[in-house]
Length: 315
Image 1 (cartoon, one colour):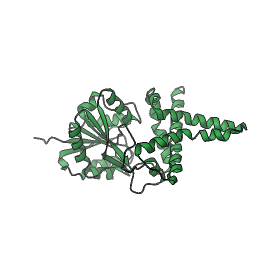
Image 2: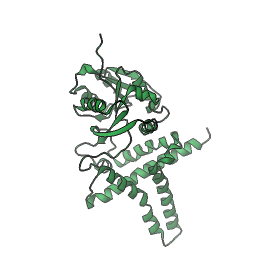
Image 3: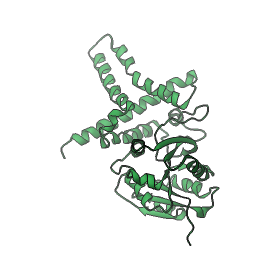
Image 4: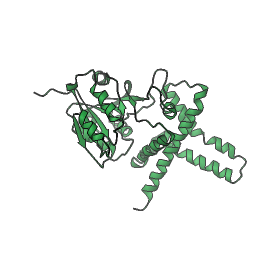
């Protein structure tokens, strides 16, 4: 008789040869017996050595090219043998008790509670990563919704809401959170099942590009973003910037005040992140945090406007 598995771990992957070995090694070396869980990698058409690395360490490698990330995750869930699904991203690392802790939390919280983990950075993160992932005094999390890199969910619950939206290229985890809450399920974020995101953007260029990519979900998931307060900051920020530049170009004497006003959206975002993380900034931290939030809004605004232009262009 085949042993009943405690959980199925699902990792989507696309060109992750730099990080997936560390991620899979961490999931292989757990306090749980290795034969009590399975690791499923769903490869989204990688062109590097991702699939070969996965094949040497995972129990199953599923080929799923040319589909969006929500559907990639759903594909892995459909192949899962266990009743408990644990989603981890292939560029994340976990501690050796991650699965044991996840199982304990899932049992104590009950089937109708879906658990998510927080994200932390490496021990010595570079500038952008440090000031984006603010580390509070108690390592408090910033997010309120699930993130795909750490989700623990009963399989029946997952499929009762039809899993992740298959049409989204990003933001599929937030959309899943919303669907679960609408159906009356509890969504709780727990630091105990947090992950270290090895693939966090390390440079300004990478960070802006990542935010521009995430902003594609605004168009894919329209009109849901209209309910998102941060989305309105993304819209107001370029509008204020254009207004300030126009005032400067036309010689309006109040252009400096208009330029200062452009910092209201990033300042609101910075304050929100600081409060959520219970981060106590030193005076030297204030400007770097504000700078990173300017980068965030630049990337998001660019990605949204690019997506809007593409959607409205004749095909």
